[in-house]
Image 1 (cartoon, rainbow, N blue to C red):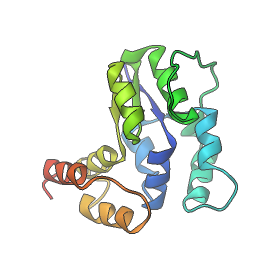
Image 2: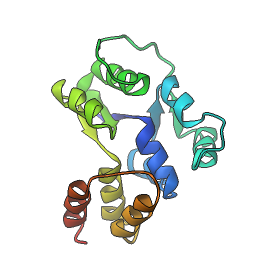
Image 3: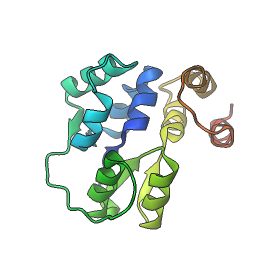
Image 4: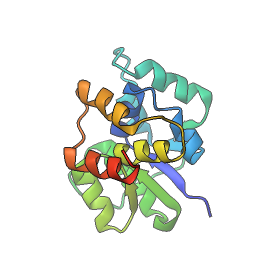
Length: 162
């Protein structure tokens, strides 16, 4: 069975900053976000990447999760992370979470959910031939206020032979 992909705000914002949103449907097909994440990434303030995100929603491959979300967690995460994890907890073997925040990832892993981050998406885009250089993408991200640890970047670069 193909996993449904649920993405949190940070990876969407990061990928928008490097013109990488288009990789998501090529890598995963349909992508879902809770309404809380949509509100976070489309605040209507002309934030960097916001127009690209609006186009992604308009295109239909990025869509809001319209089913009810059963609250399974009582933990101090932001609303988007909590909603993403709660969706995945409804059927853990059927979901892939794309999430960057350390606390959210730790909770997801504690519940044995499959979770990857923006760096892994960049690595996968390189492996699938969607980009010429993962290093160049990481450099663009580094010039923005988006942060990924050097350890994670180095691990991804090693895995893609850069």
